Every structure is written in structure tokens, then in C-alpha cells.
Length: 152
Image 1: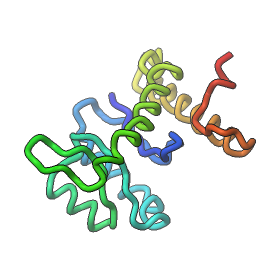
Image 2: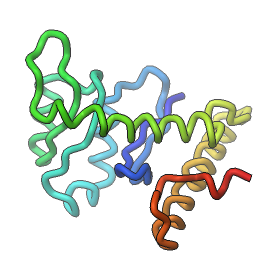
Image 3: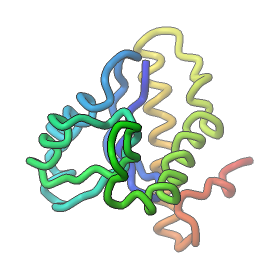
């Protein structure tokens, strides 16, 4: 199974899907956007960050119909894309979220023995990260995505 996330730059999960390992990233993102209509309507003109797997004219046309422009690195066969200089520092935010889930929240060692157990454990990790970021925001912490205060 794979966890697909849509997060803010602070790492706050706003949508997610637990899919089969071979499920496509593009299709999963489009499905998440179809289910979570408020993600689009409440924030017009969004520019999500993706990776090299989020390519294709049809996929980008589908996003454009939703008024979404994707920021991603160019594939080897295409010219540099608009916003390319911004991608590297923003990509660090993505890597932080991945590291938080994999390392600090032990998502790769979830110890779920059944599909239901895996889902419950993944949901616990998402809730823990969401609660920490929410708490940091509401208590005026300088870094919303810092979990240092919770590493006891």
C-alpha cells in the first residue's frame, strides 16, 4: 500500500488516500480533488508541487480545467518549466513531510497485521501530525511543522 498526501507547505495534511502500491499518482490526485471539492473551490488558482511522475498533457489539461497549475521538475524530453527556480526549496518541504511520516512517526513500521490494522495505524499517524501542526499554530510556535516538543 502507498500513502498519497496533499499537504500545505507546513506539512498539514488536507487530503490523503491509501492506495494499492501500483495505483497511479496522477489518477489518485484527480480522484482526491474530485472527492474533496472544497480543496479547489475555496482556493482558486492553486499551484501544487508534484514530482516527475506527475506529467502528461491530458493530466495537466485536467488540472487546468480545475484552475490548477502544477509545479514540477521538467522531464528530460521537455524544456525547463515555469517556476523551476522555485522548485528546489519547495521540494524540501515535501521531503520533510515524507521524512516525518516515514521516520519520526514510524509509518514504514506500522505493525498493522491486517488491511484494517494498517489503515487504523496510518490514520493514527496522520492524526498525530495534524494535531501537532495545529497545536503549534495555535500556540504561536515559530515553526509549525516542528515536532521537537513531542519527541519524548
